[in-house]
Image (cartoon, rainbow, N blue to C red):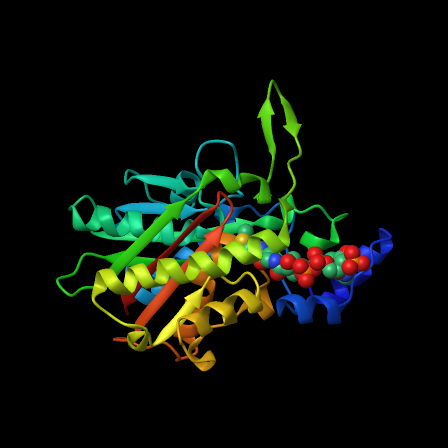
Length: 307
Ligand code: ACO
């Protein structure tokens, strides 16, 4: 759905926006909205199948599934368990990680730790979201920013280092600046089950913590800014992404950008951007890649890896 498509739909509700406003403030030109019957596990399933194909692995070889999502199919069971069944396998551990837009770096870190301790050898790590379900289409300051999508990676035990370092954080005192303040109780939804955000407060915090997490990763791995071949941040907003790249002294042509095509897809945005960068031939085996996410909670984190 392009900005013009969205602007037309919003105009029918008496809400005014424009392609120019959205592009200037965010860099977003289009986003995808899943059909109502499509759940996060459906989008995640497609991504998982394509990741397995790219890795030359079959579903039967997977011994761990982690889905990063804030828009799960159900309250329970996890979207990971549902996706496992859709993949046609059973038995391996499968669970969701809920860290909103930091979800993918959280999930990757958990999978890496489980592989290092010998609990898993072949992990499917998926970011999948249907954020369109929690958008308030009467709030133009938020509904123009987000989209639906999924991306996945296969992470395997190996003697060669893949993930070099990771750095995760949360600070729950910022819950009010980015949240979906609703829950289910006694068969009713209590509170507001739609996204609420103080955009400027999020913006300021995001640029600062993204730099801190990336620097912590570099330090843990004994690397410097100059070692980053590609920066793949959470695709929230081009201004946050370019601001972080400048702070890390990463040239803008080494910043992977897909927010223009997808909008902010929360936990799906990093694997979507990584996939695009790999399939287009930008990111190659041996490259050093910095992934970083920031989102509701507040949560934030980074993962430095060699492809
Ligand atoms: N179309 C047209 N006008 C709009 C729209 C819109 N969609 N939304 C807001 N406006 C208007 C406002 O009403 C306001 O008008 P006013 O001056 O007459 O009151 C004007 O534009 C400026 O509004 P601001 O909120 O001050 O706009 P700002 O420059 O802060 O940009 C934005 C808003 C894009 C949300 C910005 O704050 C931002 O990028 N924040 C970061 C948000 C983000 O990326 N969040 C996700 C990260 S974390 C995660 O992914 C979960």
